[in-house]
Length: 201
Image (tube, rainbow, N blue to C red; front, top):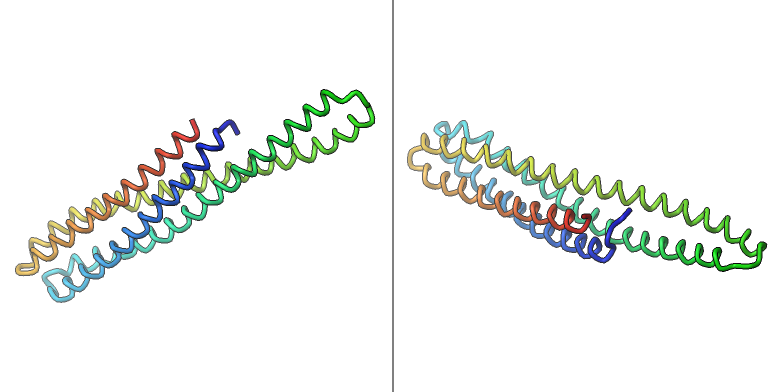
């Protein structure tokens, strides 16, 4: 794992912060979805097509909140495991230096099993690191998909809103609010992915 440990630890902490704000915005998105549902209910049959849309907003906002929490936890774990990898690599490097400098063959023979054990630990740490990194990227991409879906649905909801008479303005305003909140979440996700990429390469 050829990474700058300091950069990755800082990046993971910053990703956790970005996802905290994304979660807060997703909570606002849930409220917006419920407000849209209330307007749809008042509009009755004129807004029948929007009933499914407001439920869809609410469902995606709920999934986004869960994913944001999961990503936050993974980012913190990634930061912790990066420190563990650094410590283990340092210990292994010192052990190998000691082996090279040692004149006593008995001392050298005692170092070898210890080196093998630490190397095995390092392999396990690296595997966990890669697993966490993969999960983090996968969850970030999943949120991006949710936000793209909401963007598409927002366009449909605007079209539907024009058929609701006096409720049109309220529904259009809700669609705009939801799209703005979606854009805010996407910005947090994009920054998170950029932070990780910059720390890795």
